[in-house]
Every structure is written in C-alpha cells, then in structure tokens.
Length: 556
Image (cartoon, rainbow, N blue to C red):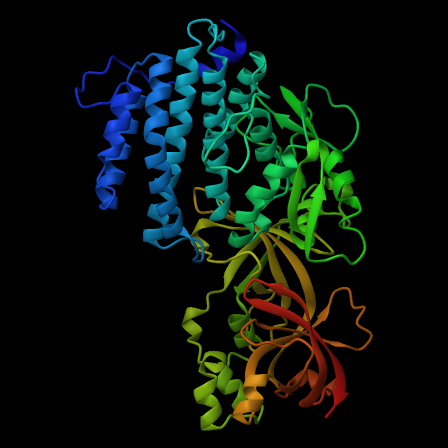
C-alpha cells in the first residue's frame, strides 16, 4: 500500500454491507430514484437527499458503483444547494437563524459529496492504491469531484467570514498528494458546475491562492467573482516539491491548515511542505495594474487562456500576497485593549456628546423643516443609546496603519467588511476622543471569537452634518441633512481639503454641500466655523455602506 493511499484512508468511519432494499446501489437505480424526487417540496427533497448520502457513506460499495450512484444523484444535490445558497445570501454576520441553517445544510451537502467521491477513489484503487487498468478516467473524475467539493466548503465559510470547517484542508492536501502519486493531478475533467474542465492540480492551487489572497478582506458580492477569477489565475501556477526562487509560499501538507490568510499566519518552513510560486501572476498583472488604470480588464495568459475581471478587484487580490517582511509598516505585538463602537451612526452619537441626530441638529441650530424631516427620516432618525454597544477590543498587534484585533465571544460582535468604527483607549464620556477605522478583513472562529484587520483612517474626528445639494434635494427645494464624521487622515496629503465619512445613500460626487458643526470645547483652541460651504465633494472610496469623500474648503 502506498503512503499517499494510506493517508487518504485515514479517518474513515466504519462501513458495512448495505441492507436497505430502497437504497439505490447502481447508476440506473440511482437515476430513477433521483428523477422521482418531489422537487416541488424542497423540505422533503432535502431530507431524502441527506438520508441517501448518509446511508451511502455507511455502506461498502465497489468503487465503480459508488461513482455511478453519486454521478446520478449529484445534479439533484446541486439543484437543492443552489436554492440553499440563495436563501443564505446577504445579512450581517453572525447570520440570523434561517440563513445560518441554510449555510449549515449547504456545507453538509458539499462535505457529503467530497467524502463520497473520496470513498469512490479509495474503493476504485483498493487494496494497494494503484489505478486499475482502463479506470484512470473514472478515478480522475472522482478525484476532481472530491477536490472541487472540498474546495467549495472553504468558499461557504469565507462567505460568512468563518474559519474553514475542521478537516477540510487535510482532505484537500491528501486528495492532491494521492493524485500526484498516481499521476492524475493534471487530468482534466468536465463539470457542468464550471465553464471549463478542471484538474486536481488547478483546484488545489486555486484553494491555496484564494487563501493567500485573504478572502476575509472581500465583500460577499466580491467573493462570488473571486472564485471565478482565482480559477482562471490558478491555471498559470503550479505546485513544486522544492522551494526554488520567486515569490514562494509553503503549503503544509501534514497539517489541517492552508498557506495562511495573513502574513502572521503564513506557514513556517518545517514539516512536510509543497511550494506555490506566485511570481507568474505578479508578472501577468504588472502591466495591466500599473499606473492609474481602472475598470474592466482582460488578461491574456499562457495556452490562450484569458482572465476577465476589474483592475480594482485584481489589485485587492494581489494585495494579500504579502509576508511580514514586505509590509509597508512594521507590526509590533500588543496586549492592550481598546473600546470600539461599530457603525457610523454609533460613532456620530458618541462624538456629538451622546445626542441622536435630531438632537445634534438642534444643538447646531440647524433643525430641519417638517417637510425635510418627512423626506429624510432615514438620515436623521433617533438612536436609542442602549442599543449602541461598546465592544472591548483586544489588540493583537499594531502598526502605523492599523491594528489586528480580537473580539471574544461574549462581545457578540456583528459587523461587515468595509464597516466603519470608532476606537478609543479612554473611558467613554461626552468628551472622549475617538479614532476612525475601517474593517478591512473579518473572520469568525467556530467558538464565536472574531478576528479583524482594522485600517486606521484618522486619529482626530468630529461629528458633523452635511447638506448635499444633489438633484433630489434641489428639486424638493432644500438640501437634506446627512449624518457624517469629519476627520483628518493619518497620512494627510490633502493640502487643506476636508475629509468626510458618510452614508452611501446620497450621490455626492462632484457636488456642493453645506457642512454643519455644533460648537465644542476644542473650538476654543482651534477655531472652526460652524457653517462651511464645500466645493467639489468627491468620492475617494466606497467602503461597504459608507463613502469616504474629500471636498475643497470655502469659508461660508
């Protein structure tokens, strides 16, 4: 028995000869069974598919029979998985119960298929781990299917910002190692799920590339495109036994982990390792992503393959391929704590001396007309101070550019990538100074602990209101107020411009606005006008549900 085959069999649950007369044990019976599923009743179909996959996993079958059965029922499983995926989309994490249940069921089916096809490989190649004569195509199909579903379990975890399920990296490593041992890692297999044939090599490389790009930095919408783009990019890469040169990352094949999501987690050079060199992708992206390029891009790669995406997404993807040594700012270990308030509304509440937006406008002498209140209720609704939690935040390390933090389970943090938040290291009262930060990546562990990477945007902030003179407000006769935070960027190259963080519900690009401030004690030291006209309000970044904008200053 080969070492790779022995590893592939590790952890198998006990199986026995099937004794259920209704269990489809060959491809023809499985096809008939799948066609008879009551697809109009999702709950019954879901239960029947779960039951048959569970029974198959407990039964001893000949390899060819298991593969035929799985191929016959897989389309029905994929159909129900697509429905579950639609049900699970959207929402702040942690998910509400219905969405969480849909994700759990989706992950179950993905794992059940991965394990089922793994069994098909094991049974096909029994007892010694060699591929039977004229069975190479069948074994390759089972290997690709198993690798595909194992890799897809990662994407479901990433989509809700959770760590991958236990054992998934181990399975993917062992599938790849066995495929290499029987020289089937580069054999392409067609699949209706994907637009092009797949190989075990490309799926393994894609999963590793996706992890190295830190998928927790991407929005749920971006992650949909991320799977497709990394599939195209993976075809330009290969895995090596030796370290070599270039930009290489270690793949720890003897552990239940990938190459690491952030530089601090990158695999150390110990244990059983394979190597992935990303230099071919660096070279491929260098010219298309240079300068001020933006918008759609089509990359021409080797073998006539092309990669269609956007400059913005590819830049963000490439931004994850770093190590601790290549960081722009040196990171220092930390053990202190900060207090955090998540969301622009909560930060504005604390900056304004714990006034809701209506109270802030009154304090600033800018109370709106009844007509404007009806139009802009969403922008100035009151806030219940009891519903704005302050989260105790553990800082793991820090740099001039931000923090890597952890929120313990008991903090019950609900957040999204791109969320703005306020940070302070002082006791919170009406005079507390707040820093402004943005969540750049986010990960939930199974125990409820939350890890996040925070980019520090500003150390000085102030609550303001902005009346944007957009098309809707001009037609209504009066500009509408919007909650905003004025800030001074940590890297201030604005030459006197003013920076704002505000909600994305108003179109602000290249418009005029009126800035409204309430008087504060700091104005005695550094006077600021309570009214100010802003010219050419321009969007610098759209971050989730927020807009970072800059405007030219003009005294009112």
